Length: 167
Image 1 (cartoon, rainbow, N blue to C red):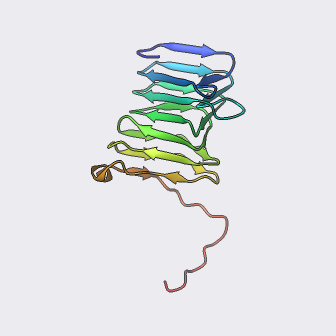
Image 2: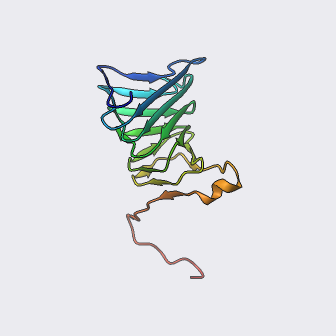
């Protein structure tokens, strides 16, 4: 979907539903929209991981679904001003930047967490990141270290902090 294209479905959306498949979807440009009435699965389906799936959202493109899951075989590729109107869960998947990005979505890290590839672009995550999974940012090369992944942190706590020994 590019340059104002619009696709809507009454059910689920899948990119690389089953093993040995490859899928790629691009939603790019203002007014470009892919809308699902139910869930979106990237790199799998409602039951398990599948093939290699990539969803690219950039330049004001919008994707909406009741829930979005990125499996360990899936990539969420983000460029300038991506809009994902959906609760987002990573189950070992990856985020790959295709431009300088501010991503304001909250997301949950399940089993396998998420790997973030900044690819020489500066990136800011501004939503709530929750769950038991980890967040990993591999460095592609020494020159990639000059580009940042900024996590905007708002401290919250349920109980007063205890002083640390030695401080």
